[in-house]
Length: 139
Length: 139
DNA sequence: CTTTAAACTTGTAATCAATTCAAATTTGTT
DNA sequence: AACAAATTTGAATTGATTACAAGTTTAAAG
View 1: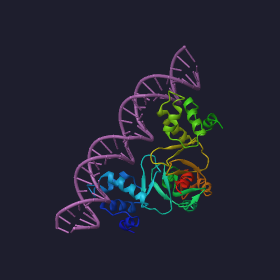
View 2: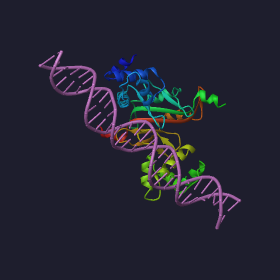
View 3: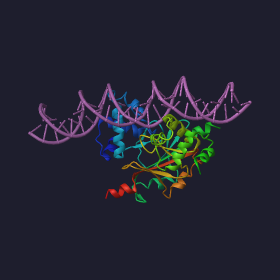
View 4: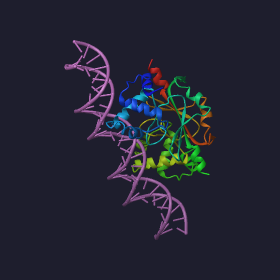
């Protein structure tokens, strides 16, 4: 599915800037920060403002078209993949990976459900530690 | 267990300030922010600096004596309860609750384990939505 | 086509949580 | 008591994010 269809699906009008940001998110599974997205797109759309990237990502998150991850202290990170999955951040290299341990689906599927009177609309599961590549280097 | 024993357990020297912060965390299960802790303790220890509260909480988190929760956009929140549990943040009133759906223990117990070569040292599970009290008011 | 209003984008300025840093104080040790 | 290490302090700085007001684009109606 392309960026245009993805935006339409979430009732977001497809401006040039929004399409570019969505396209970037769909093509890069790296969970980029605002700065990374801005730096990548600025050469292509020279008039692009960083404020627009902020506005756009906030809009995406509100409409459910992207996930905002607060998995690291400094920057928010964004994910265009809104399917059920968790995230892993390596404390060595800082990279953020999609993560899918067996137990996760069950847990995330609590979404939209009600427990003890609490209405769950969003679930975030964050793991931290050493990624495969950094763990091997340690040896 | 008192604040002193708690600190000793995690190899943290018990200064006046550290004891006060730890004591506050153990007595208030509200997942307070730095500001909340500082504002509460400043009247008691007038010389207290906010930098000390920052330093202290960072130290606690590094030693595993407290949890740093990035469950909300603006401030970090802290939890003196380091046992296995998840958190729920109400998007209406902003309060952060301890939360313990059945599936959580299993998920959090991945801690210190290895999956696909990834070494997990920390797990955070965040739920967002409407808390019981705010959900009832909505009707 | 024009006109017009709404939606969107832009850049600057402001905010504010968190960190840096160097000086002052406290603590533990000989 | 004297010294070194650890801790605390507050002022200054950083840096991600937001606010805002002006400029631009888009879409719909005449």
